[in-house]
Length: 269
Image (cartoon, rainbow, N blue to C red; front, side, top):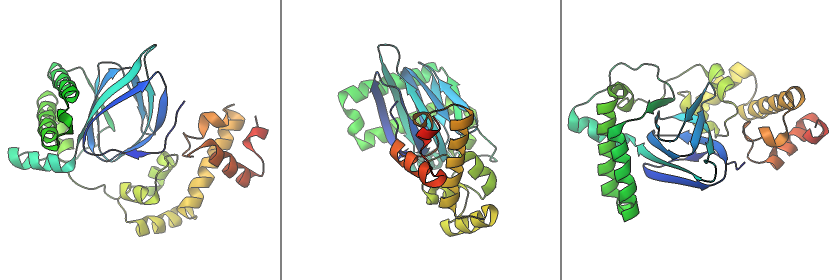
């Protein structure tokens, strides 16, 4: 398995291709994303449930999400997908041009399985063709294709209107519940603060009141305690769990574990 630290996407259109290698990691998704699985399969996990995508399926990922991903190429083939990032400025411009506003905010899943769509399939084929011709390096051309994607999404899935055109920032949420669900994500404290609707200073203050510990210390302890449980009770190996628990590499995990417990995780296995 290959692993990686969280990466942030930028607005635009991205084609992903991996050669016969399973790949997993974490990602913060700052913008709404329309994605099509060309070949292979993908599993996204928001900490509450898994969202699988098979070859030929479309998915819509809501912005401001922390997600783990697992990418699987087909047998003797390559993992291939294409993603269209629907940035906030493009959506605001589209909203003004067409007089569209979001309705009342409702709870929506992190990932929508859009299944199959003939109109979106034609759209994707056009993107692949334009990509081959080199047009997707033109910023103005990409803007046109992003607007086309927004229009097709609204026509095929009208319910997405209230999600696409909700431009509000995350509101203040239950900090304890959020951190218990997301402590294993390897993100900076300012990102945790933003996603809980707080400034960094307020986040640190509220965190200390709830957990009676500074955030970094609590995160390290929580991850190591979960690691101990998985190693001793579930028979997992260090290489199986270090990335899922927010450690950047195996060496970092082993050093932190030994410092906290006084012995190496190898002593358990």
